[in-house]
Amino acid sequence: DGGITQSPKYLFRKEGQNVTLSCEQNLNHDAMYWYRQDPGQGLRLIYYSQIVNDFQKGDIAEGYSVSREKKESFPLTVTSAQKNPTAFYLCASSMGEAGELFFGEGSRLTVL
Amino acid sequence: GQNIDQPTEMTATEGAIVQINCTYQTSGFNGLFWYQQHAGEAPTFLSYNVLDGLEEKGRFSSFLSRSKGYSYLLLKELQMKDSASYLCAVMDSNYQLIWGAGTKLIIKP
Image (cartoon, rainbow over all chains, first blue to last red; front, side, top):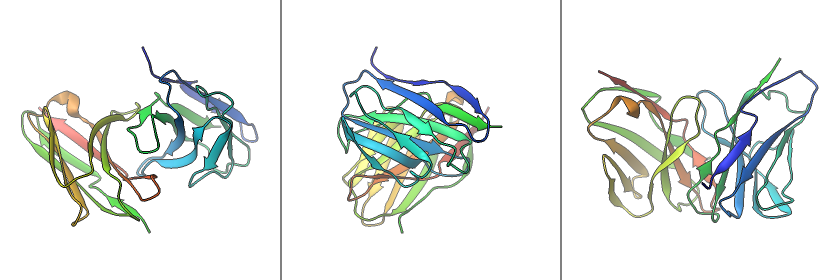
């Protein structure tokens, strides 16, 4: 079945370490997104990509990095520069820029 | 600035009807989405409105008034599995989604 796969589901990190969250989709979608979700707040866009080898910063890109070397993959790296990285991270994809979003199951990152 | 407002929490009884409101102020409008999110899980798409009026899909309906910057999600014949957060999101003139904080719906027997 087609869908979006995020891994790992749970991740613990020590302060000062970088960590990479994986996101793979087999829906043949052009657009992919990374969101961060914190309690009591709406989803906030970190980065998005509408085509391979191109991506744009969202509202809260500082301390994060991405790559889009393949259409199916859009990994997110949470760097040590991110001041408050503990959060629930959601990857999503859509057929076009105005389409319905399909989400992965999410990755919960906890910094110890 | 851009803003989406929804109630933080609502409680309803199994078998009843509940209406979840969403008001928005955004730079342009290219549609409004409702998503359902169970605790600890990913959001799933419920509905999309771009024209004024009511869209019905089974037990769920969504209404839009663009002139009032207002939408609601109507859930009928509530079931325990409807206990979840309901997220309202508006697509602005740049095709960026602006998200509300979500409404946590608690269903009681």
